[in-house]
Amino acid sequence: MEKIYKRIFILTGAGISAESGIGTFRDANGLWNNHKVEDVATVEAFEKNPQYVHRFYNELKPNLLEAKPNLAHLCLTKLQEHYKGQVDIITQNVDVLHEKAGSKNIYHMHGKIDEAICLNCGHLLQSNDDVDMSTICPHCAMAGFMKPNIVFFGEMPLYMPEIEKKLRECDLFISIGTSGVVYPAAGFVHTAKYYGAYTIEFNLEKTSNNYLFDEHISGKCTETLPQFVEQLIAVQENMENENGY
Ligand code: OAD
Image 1: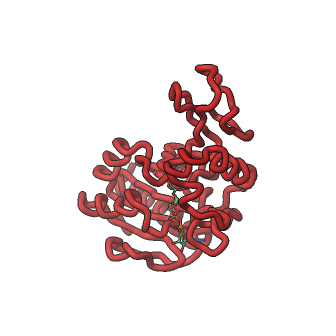
Image 2 (image 1 turned 90 degrees about the vertical axis):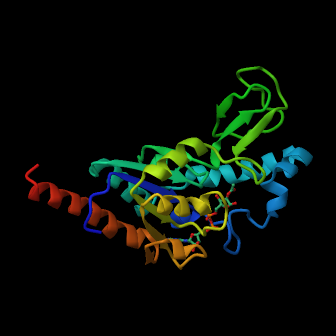
Image 3 (image 1 turned 30 degrees about the vertical axis):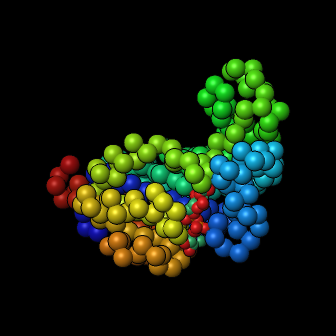
């Protein structure tokens, strides 16, 4: 890793928030909290029973909003603050722990727990309180149109044009705490590699798309990331000193 990278693309998944007490999706007693995915995270479920879907996310909200960022989130902030180069965070998580850790350039491709979108006028409502079908949109004044700003199965993830561009331009692609089974995020490593990026996976175990990674760093990300980030920053500082910057 004795190289200075110009553009670092960081993809995060539920694993980065696991040590903040937020369950991952595919573990036993995971984030769906024993609900069937089809009942709470699909377009069909929302069309059939929007109140039920709202209730699920309203119940999830306080836990997600009360959680505190862990060392892995803080490491990414440190990298953004000290590394001279573009460092973007593309997260599949709907929690706000990257924000709480003070990170910037965060793209919530699967939406955000503290937001709802009005399907009548497109207004994005930020709210830490419950939102449901009785919520009146502050923009168009209509009730009955609020949808959690969560990307359901059957919907297009957010920010895809920006993400595609960043994937083509990055020279270091890092994946942290994601199982690599949900597309399109699972395919990002392929695009990044195709366009020449060095690719690294941080996970407890090798994932199914591990063959696309140049390096796999095994372990809890709160234990593996600190050293990695320190090293990236140190390599850059050493090279700058050697080159007399
Ligand atoms: P998953 O629950 O599928 O995977 C979590 C990954 O994190 C697993 O591969 C774990 O091995 C790893 N992991 C757990 N603890 C870790 C730790 N302390 N350090 C490092 N790795 C750890 O969660 P995601 O991959 O994020 O989408 O799931 C992707 C999407 O599936 C979610 O965004 C969600 C769901 O459908 C939507 O809801 C739209």
